[in-house]
Length: 386
Image 1 (cartoon, helix red, strand yellow):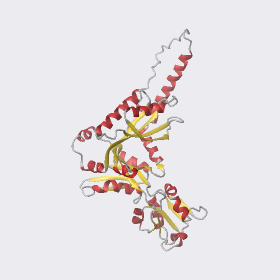
Image 2 (cartoon, helix red, strand yellow):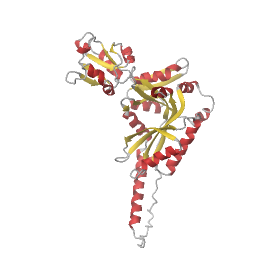
Image 3 (cartoon, helix red, strand yellow):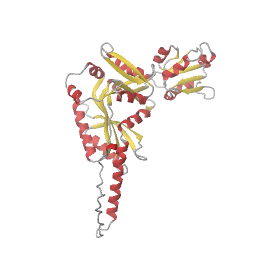
Image 4 (tube, one colour):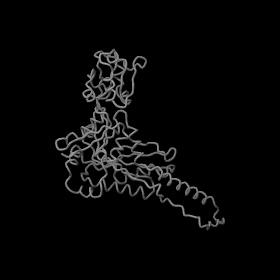
């Protein structure tokens, strides 16, 4: 039986683990699914790049808390080539200064004679070997949505006895109403301690001495899966503020070789069929770029107009600070075709190719990269009532 190796943010029992199981458990009848918990999100990226797994799941955004900024920053680190961009922007700055100097020079002024020294070289943006960049060995191939149902998990049977609660930092703001109504939001009486994951929070409870007072005064907020794995009872179910609270995960897969791309013209493999079985016919594209002429009036508007021109609708746009230069940002955009009657998957790709060609030829952006193209999950449309 063939093996599929799936990396996720561990330990077992996290929502990332649940996302991995939702995505790949249907294949378990025909494949051996090996789940590989990773200590950090960064390691989830590194594992897929180093071919230590076949797929890796990354938490990307939450319907209540918004973007998982660490995941965005890691995508930025993998796909934005800082040294190359600094070289290009330095050249742009020199050319801009030269143009301003030329404009300031009177038309009848004598032009200086250029140096003829053998050491004179022509300025160019051709990259030296030290600035050559390697592209990651992975891209985004699918998305998975996980309903987030938080539970108050504890060995205690009396909620009024709770004095300490463990959970992941993002959880607190998703359970505000419950904590307030249960008088568990009083920071003077209740210690709320952050953990690296919700599953780790429940594990903390098992490390307290059995039958001790501290064990009966301590709780965790986590999933029912974490409760099951660590064998700690749930005192209060579904304590999240919003019943529709959902986290979206992205599935990373290996970049296909040219031979594999040719084979894709043949009938899909069983794995590909399963990945696409719960998807719609809408293909979404995740791109990243930096605005080249950052201070030009209307530069972002000019870029967005290109997407509209080629009938690609922006689903989301997010920015993260770059380290290329101060106050210059990395843009992440998700787009899909605006033609609701379009059932031909290839059309989106042609439109996207046209956008990339125009943006690059007009020198509007730098490091324009398609991080992934994948079919929109049917769950997305179920959640928005479409």
